[in-house]
View 1 (cartoon, rainbow, N blue to C red):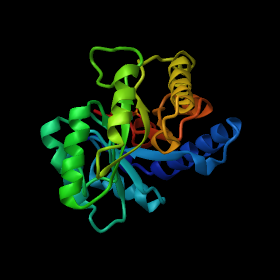
View 2 (cartoon, helix red, strand yellow):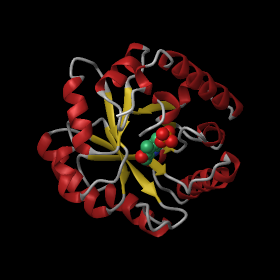
View 3 (spheres, helix red, strand yellow):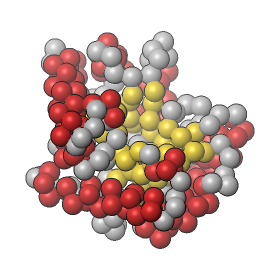
Length: 236
Ligand SMILES: *Cc1c(COP(=O)(O)O)cnc(C)c1O
């Protein structure tokens, strides 16, 4: 685990990220409150989470269930919202409802159906986002546009899970301007689906943008940004 998060710089970094989020939101004609920051604490310890919470951060993102559950146990005294943002095997679906405020990486109807069953038996409502794969990258999960339409339609009949929007993990590029077209495509896809009559409740959130490109993502319509290394430091 890196110890960067425990240096004295975290409050300053968090404040700077919040200020950049606010400016980008205003540039996109929205209020700063329209964009939610998820602090991606993967590979960092509970002490880093505590340090961010001390500065008022409540939403945290993790990409592995076991790591997230361990950190939750160590911070159970804090009122945090944990978001699972990494790929989840269907056979682990029952670990999510109740433990997480939401899952951002639904990549199949099978997974969504299992989450639905698990949420119903846990007696909770689970907000989820559907991960979209616009670039057809072999190494990343996510649905193409046709699959997405099918899952959005099927989701309306599944109890316990509530689709609230779309998530994108675009191809990496050093220059955020090279990522902008992917963000724009996700927003355009959202607008197309709305025009086709998909209920707005299913398309409220666009989770896109990470440490090096979150401002561009916000300019293109992100409502949720997932920021790890810019806040906590370099992951080892
Ligand atoms: C790790 C991760 C992030 C954060 O990445 P940074 O570049 O460190 O901000 C965001 N989204 C997902 C899905 C991740 O796995």
